[in-house]
Image (cartoon, rainbow, N blue to C red):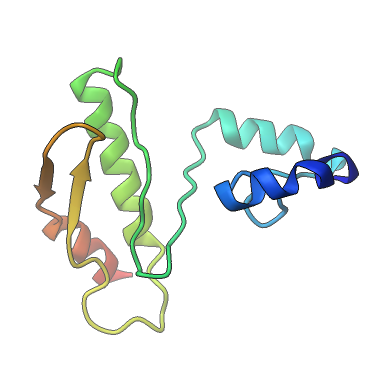
Amino acid sequence: MNGLKQMARVLGPKGLMPNLKSGTLVKPDNLIEAVKASKQGMIEFRVNENSFIMNKFGKRDFTDENLQINLDALLRSIAARRPDSVKGRYMQRAVIKSSMGPTLKLDISTYQQIGAKI
């Protein structure tokens, strides 16, 4: 971590600075478990100050089926992590936005039901 202090001004504002909370900085004892979790497809997402979750769920060379599986896994993971303090609808809407394409609205009614059951 001491070696990264010089790069903190560059990495920090971009959100690339490693830390223990996000799992990007691990102790040597936990290194093997962290690598296994990463290779198994650990999903990490963050909520910004406007309560938006922006996350990637695929790459350009993925097949349509793989993109659909990844999106389903992401939305199920978000729905399953509904905090007990949230009353009413947890997920209100979801959209897919590519960098150069139009925004696509998603039907998330099944995911809203998953979040309500938990």
